[in-house]
Image 1 (cartoon, rainbow, N blue to C red):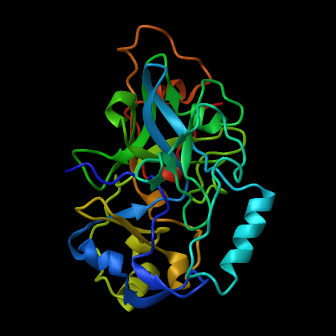
Image 2: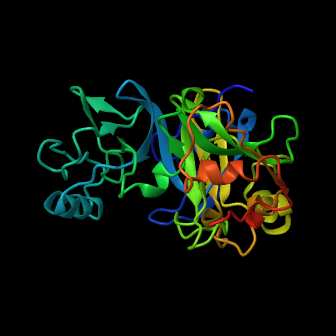
Length: 313
């Protein structure tokens, strides 16, 4: 399977949306038609926080999403402009003075528009970007819990390569994930919509974007999608992301269709999962408290449902 698109900026809805609302109309967007969305690969939209793997300090690193946002004065001017009748004109940003400071190691996201060598804010007035997740970071402690830079590995959830209906949790070399974006999910991320782990024993892992393909995709029609999300077991997901051949990414969220999220029971957390965490090939011992070590104690175990995984404290 070809490597699917990288999520470097906000994805538009596959349908035209009502002005100033999240609700989708029944009309496919022009962008979707131009990208030949009918031939795209449909994947599950996962509810977590976006991450990126690229080099830092001479080795592959996990990076956390950090959008550069306007300061109070610029934000006030921008909102006034959006609600004025001059919306046909272009808002003029001063990227040197209008934005809050970011760490020196911050980098802008790829694929965003540039002018005179400087990133241009998106339609929300933000400049999407990334900061590296340092070992033992307090601000990004849940990010750092799923990587080990000494051994260059990440804790990843994806489909078992031999059994598509089975999920697999394994240690994947960060070098294999270079230039990919992933979603961090777990106990302390976005209210834990998948019911993973517990406060006493939090559980987190990374899911590469595009890793969970949607089988039996409904027709790309508003009512067909609405019925699929409401009535099918496979539809108990946050949304769908279409990966088009030209790299374009398009989405539909349950909220676009007036549906609720999160749900009491999701398709992902009801799927069986196997643990593949043989750490014998690494010379040094892992910290007893780290997730890699805890998963190694239940290596090769299979669970009927993802949410059934409980790690020893």
